[in-house]
Amino acid sequence: MKNKMIVIDGVDGSGKGVQTRRLHQALLADGMRSILTREPGGSAAAEDIRKLLVEGEPDKWDSMTELLLMYAARRTHLNDTIQPALKRGDWVISDRFADSSRAFQGIAGELGLEVVEKVHQLVVGSFAPDLVLILDIPESVALRRALARGGGEDRFEKKGAEYQARVRQAFKQVAATDNRLYQVIDANQSIDAVTVQVFDTVNRQFQLSLKVNKDIE
Image (cartoon, rainbow, N blue to C red):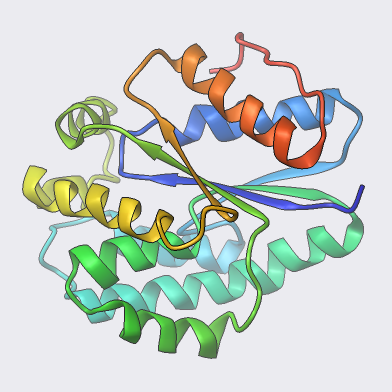
């Protein structure tokens, strides 16, 4: 089977990290080459930009500046990590991709999807992942989880529950545009139950038989 790119996206605190790790490891365990990456970040230069975006006070950037920084990071991520991996024949599992910009800056940040799409076409062009799984969870639960992690990468969480609620609805709005590309997963349940839904969706879509390793956190 031709290598594919799978993105897991959603609000901060929805559990993307553990689900991408489990999926990545399951592909490796099944004998397939796979890389695990993330946004913002995923390449050396993009990780530098990540710090600018996710650390500090919530109002230090407006939505347009966030969008431009995101796409600067995304371009180097795409050029330096994603496309080389796909050319090598690797699967790519990414914690976030372009739909985060549509949700966070386009809809929740009120720039509008038209503005995001113009930048997207300039930077990314026609490239798109093969499957995007949106982890949907009440924003109050997600925000509590995200803040409990601690650390300095909490700039978006500091924008508060109302902002996170807009982000959640934005992801639902984006997902409704294409039921072949997007699948919404109920993330308001145990980690293992979410993993079962993720794996069932991936196995069905790509005719795989990936097995869950619940020891991966």
